Image 1 (cartoon, one colour):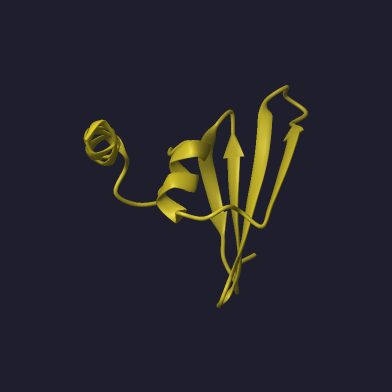
Image 2: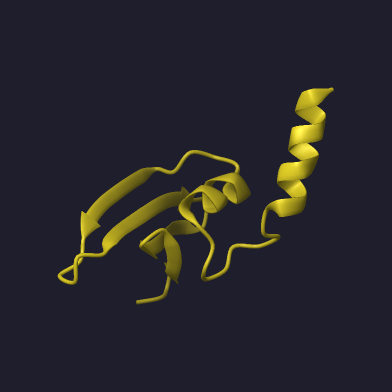
Length: 79
């Protein structure tokens, strides 16, 4: 019962779609699966940068984060 209440609360708080500005944790929850790979580094400006890779049936999707906020999505056919 407590688990159902927590899931309901989480669902109400969670963004409805993957869009710029969401956090790394929100992406993982929305995708519902573990990523294929994760790379963590630092920009020349001292910002934390993360690349989250998902191998999808249609190709790879790369989600780029700066300081825990989604800044760019690269999908098959995009540069």
